[in-house]
Image (cartoon, rainbow, N blue to C red; front, side, top):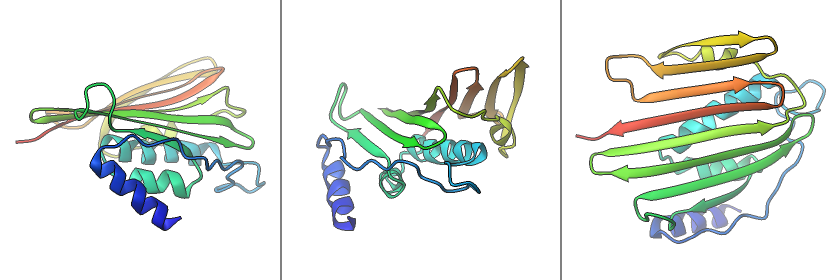
Length: 184
């Protein structure tokens, strides 16, 4: 499997299209006492961690997704190649439901823009936005309307470069992050 990762990373470096990996893992049970799937806090922490790797253009995302059992598709030769890259990954967690990560990277002279969305459509449990609200280095707020929560944050400082939206409503949980990196 390690050799496969090295081959995949080498192919990405050359800019070729990658096929979807056939590996799918169901029922990942980390962070649970009952073994029925990850806890709501672990799900949010995973969303934050994995999406950060995508928006930071870290190739470690490929190893993380493979190691954790996500099926993934990385396309580095679509649209406005070589200035646009896209990644999509899915997994099914017992006791939670289907989870999808989708993100892209756009390159402009002096700037990179990264976006990632971690979505659980029809989650089988309620997911709190508290772990997102507790992130250090971000200003923001959560608004609650009945059983639904919505939040928006931006990185602190005079020139914020990272923006987060997250929401949990009756049928969806979404964590979204956008990062605009400026290079001198």
